[in-house]
Length: 388
Image (cartoon, rainbow, N blue to C red):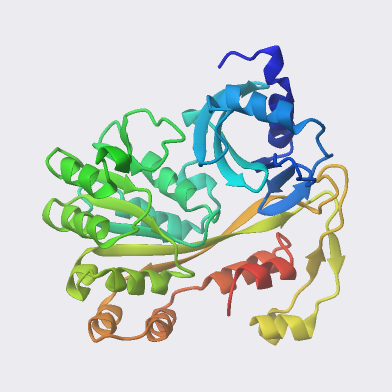
């Protein structure tokens, strides 16, 4: 986009957000609002200095994102791309009407497809990365599901699998709400429900084409789930997708609750990966602390595994937060006979989880504790983001 002098108020905020590693910039532009701009950095909110004239910020925001400045009664959305330093940054704005004005949530992401991470750069254990590679290899088929809350890295993991699928040798497509990054060689479709281009409709269209791997951004309803299963079962396609569930076994229950028959789930689901992102300790200032033995035991650490822990301190390098970046912790559920039998018999999520653990699934809590013992994160982060 072409920047103009009147764009400077919002662009200055965007530059500060990007330079500090923020994923979101939150702006309260109501006439009575006194909340300062806020940045979401590594999942946590941080205040910026208060802004002056909210009307100027709103006008600049509307011009950058091509919004209607006079319309404050209905939600609006817009997107653009800006050059910050030597990188292209994608930005999308969601405008929500509030009392006496609007609230703007701006998402920032790296728009360069060449910088999309492959599986080797996600920080996955080698054996888990190999499971995902096998799932998207040529002539593979079935559902690969990534689950977790918002901002747990599900989309990043799915994109890493798309890169691993090698679009130069396989026909790869996506069905997304927003195609934030343009991937070379990948057919990317965007859902437009007002025009009838629902996720299910786009998947049905792909069913009539030659396709090997498809990524559906999120399974939200039975129709989308049904067509995804059909693609995997009748056409031999690998379907990558995401669901909002707290852990991997819960994703099986979610599919069943959507109305997918248990035998179809058993026949198509290859692997489910639950994941969380924990804040990573700053190597420049983290400080060793004495083991909190009672707290560690309560978190699930056995006595002979209690080691030295680290705490967050804060320095210039980490902007006094004590953290820089995030650590990916995961659990992988690969379906096996015992699990599918339980599922078909109507077992509860707790029973499915117990069966998975009996057959060797390492939980996210266990992965998080391993990161704690390696000095990568803190006990507070482990307890906040994972359950025993």
